[in-house]
Image (tube, rainbow, N blue to C red; front, side, top):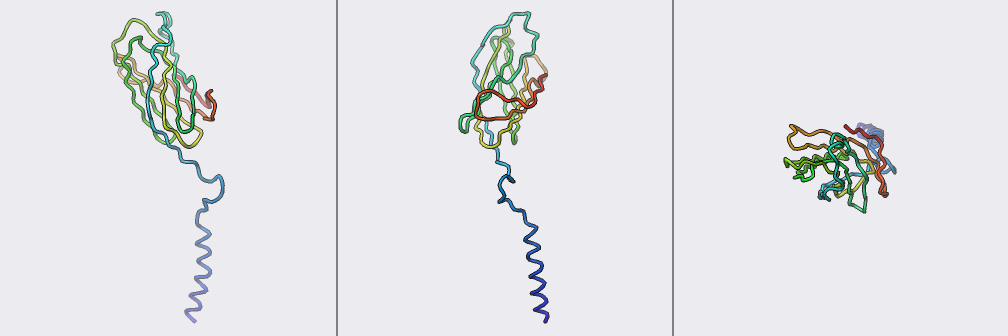
Length: 166
């Protein structure tokens, strides 16, 4: 009799335990895993020289991106010294890309506009949070110049969801 009660109890408990398990087989319940790995920084040099009257403007922005299969290239526009010595550092975590760029040269007496590329191995989701920090020669620390969330698709124009430029 004890064995029969035990079997009946097991028949009642086992279905309840199975009902508590998470079912990931439903379409759309799992997020696609995102992988971002920094590949290279390309400095194309001075795109255009600014006069002294323009040196106080803060013109930092994402001009666009190219998504080609598993390669993502971000093009960032920023002003800097005409003869810079750039030092870059990239930190990637989940969908967050933190780009820090420093000009280590005492420089020339002019300011240039730059449109430089930051290229990543990219697979996964379609949203990426980009933070661009810049430090001019002589500054004591980095200043956040771009803080934006971009929705990626297969086009070349950025679709900026939010943009905070300092």
